Length: 331
Ligand code: SAH
Image (cartoon, rainbow, N blue to C red; front, side, top):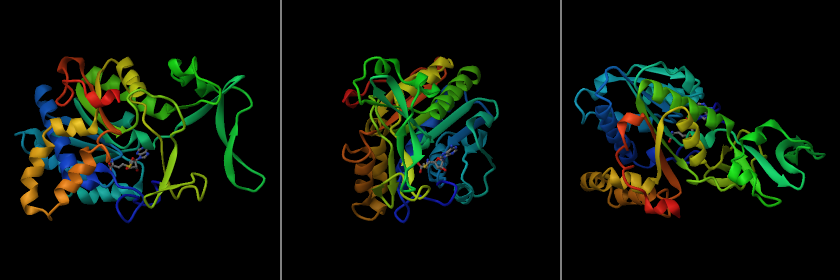
């Protein structure tokens, strides 16, 4: 799906936070600049982004990064992106900058790291399991008599069932559904190991529960509407809720410290998005800044469902916006 074309924006299938407003990437730029200063202002420092989409977040981040003297010049940009169409968009969004692209986070070179991933983990594949009287059975994709794809239950246990969270695995009722994302766990573990060994901080923003509650969260979206995942495969965006507790566990096992998740609304408010909105409002189309603010931080928009998780070297302490717990997270 991602390899075919650029799926983002009003004319595409879905819209993400950086495409709603420049304020989103700018707040993340301030967060990165503060973390770079706490890291002792390393030069060079690697700035990596996973799944950078159109490159909008990175362009906005780098503009805000100019607030910290020496920070932009210290940065070496590494983008993890598998889509040729989106790599071309990223190239165009970052004119004149040296950028190195990678297929996987594991190939980003060694060194002090700042890493950002917005709506990357939700795009990674999940395995689903159903709790049956004979144990957990994986849902597999099969071709039915009518020639269409559909779901069937595996006849026997399959290996990925070992990744189901123990709390869910041992206490689920018959019919319960569990999801695991081995690719997400591997990426979070790689980030945690790297940060523990070489220093740095990562910011993971996505939608999902603070504690994975189980359930079937796979969804397909096409032209901003829900879609049957098996109808015209490859034409719709497939995503699943991110299990932040599972990502934090994987990153912590590598030796990094995790903070949060805090809701996206709390994260952006604590970084000062309302002050930024005040600055942008006079020159903007009337109402546009407040509409964007509402989508980014309001509970009916992305403010509560979306969350931010920080993965940092243990010496750095709680990052900006993660110092206090977030009342909304227990919701
Ligand atoms: N961060 C952007 C785009 C989110 S869409 C934004 O917020 O607008 C998901 C992004 O992850 C796309 O850039 C997509 O091409 C990329 N992606 C999806 N699966 C990937 C994978 N397995 N490896 C690397 N990039 C991937």
